[in-house]
Length: 95
Image 1 (cartoon, one colour):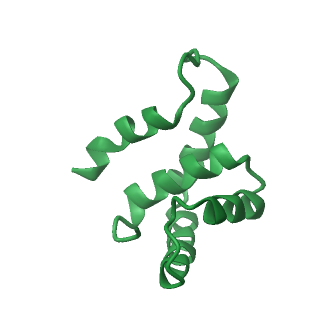
Image 2 (cartoon, rainbow, N blue to C red; image 1 turned 180 degrees about the vertical axis):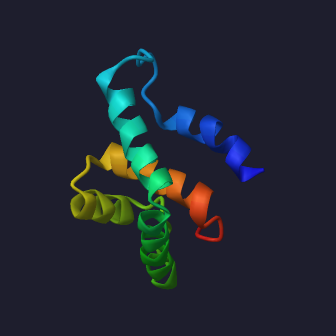
Image 3 (cartoon, rainbow, N blue to C red; image 1 turned 135 degrees about the vertical axis):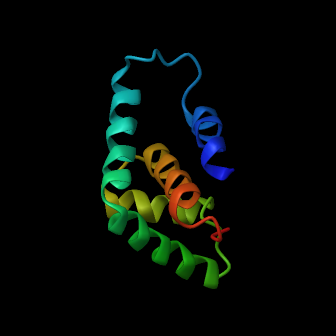
C-alpha cells in the first residue's frame, strides 16, 4: 500500500509548477533510480535513519535532512526527497 502512495508523497515534495521535463525532476529521478537499482544503498540509509530514531530524531527533521544532504552531497530538498523515498521503499518502520 505504501508503495502505491509513493508517487503522491513525492509529488507533494516537488516544487509546484515544475515542468515535467525540468532539470530538477530529471535530477531527482536519477537520484531515486540510483537507490532503486542499488538496494544496498537504500538499506544502508535505513540503518542510519534507525540510528537517528534511536536518538529520538525523525527522518523528517531538519537536522537529519541536513546531515543526509551533507553526506550524500545533495541539496536539502533532494535529501528530503531521497529519505522519503528510501523510507517508503525499504524501511517503513522508520519514523
